Image (cartoon, rainbow over all chains, first blue to last red; front, side, top):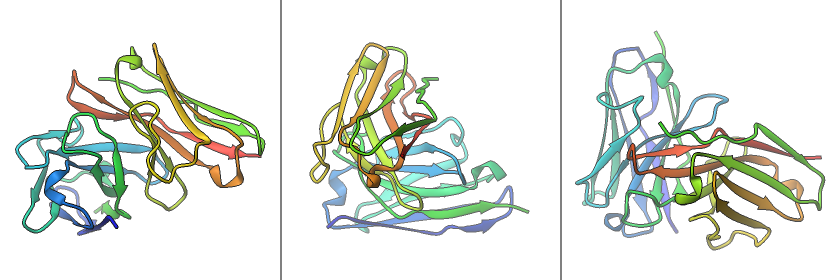
Length: 122
Length: 108
């Protein structure tokens, strides 16, 4: 069965960097686009970024563009979120999610990880 | 940027029907996905492309989309349906995914 396991979360000071990883199994990873979605404590879902099946196309929410970078290594079945210049408002649970197809413009996400908490605080 | 508006809360008695709306400018021209999220859990896709139910999702869940409103309908509501529900679209103008504000469904 599909499994997505996020890691890399923790407590970090404002202005510092962090890299999240999401290890995928149970499906042909290179056939699907992948998303990162976050949820601040007690708040709703916020889309963060999406990457195409082959890594050639990437799109970002305005709130993270220029600071966050999504990437993937299809040989390792892993998608990453590199987060730079972190702000207190980036404090959230970060979920990785598998799109329902190779397309990165439109499909929903049919499998999600359990999430990893990132806390940005001095 | 594209905005999706949902009612903050919907209350429904067991066995009755709950309708959750997702409003957006000409949302009928977009494909809408719906997610259910229970406390402490990851979201679950319950409706994709306006009305398609993924495998394992009960027929009690259905979706529609027209004009400026998409609707998630839950018939014969059960206690286990108590959760937060979110709509999502891809906005081709901004090349962003957008989530709705979320609706908390309470089963009375």
